[in-house]
Length: 189
Image 1 (cartoon, rainbow, N blue to C red):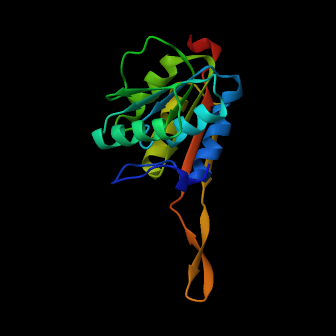
Image 2 (image 1 turned 90 degrees about the horizontal axis):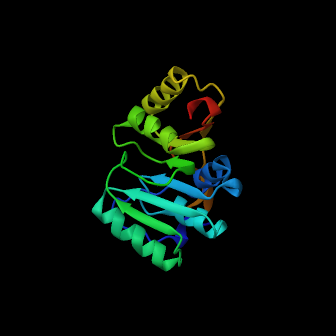
Image 3 (image 1 turned 90 degrees about the vertical axis):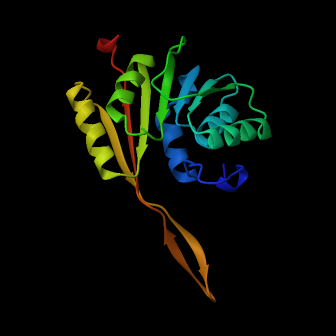
C-alpha cells in the first residue's frame, strides 16, 4: 500500500511502504491467525496485514494518545474490524497467543519486549523487529544469541525515492532501516 493512503498527523511514526513490505513478508502471515503489532503508530502494519488477510486477528498496542486517535481513524477509514486497539505499553497481559509479533519500536525496553514477544508466540511463531538505531540492532542480535536463537534473518534496507529538483530529478535517500526476523523454536514452549 502506498504511504499516502494512510491518514497522518503530528509526530506519529509510521513504518514506510518498503520496510512494511519486507516486514509483512518476513512475518509469514499466510499461516497466521493472530498478529500483535507493538507500537502500532499510525497502524500501517496492522492495517495492511488486516486488509491482506481478512481472517487475521490483529492486536495493535500503542501508548501515545495522539497515535491512538490516528490509529483508530485509520482503522475506521480502511474498515478493518479485525483490528483490536489496546491502549498502553507492552509488555502487557494478553490472553490470546499469537503466530506473529511485529515490533516497530521498543520505547527503551528492547530486551524485555523481545522476551515478552517470544512468550506471546506459539511455537514456530515469527518475531519481526525494525530499527533505525545501530545500538538497538546490536542489542537485539546479542539478546537473541543469548537466548540461543541462531536462525536469524537480518537486513539493512536503504531506500531512495526519485524526487524532482529544479528541471531534473535525483534519488532522495531515506534513513537506513534494520530488519530482524526470527522464529520461536519448539524448545521455548
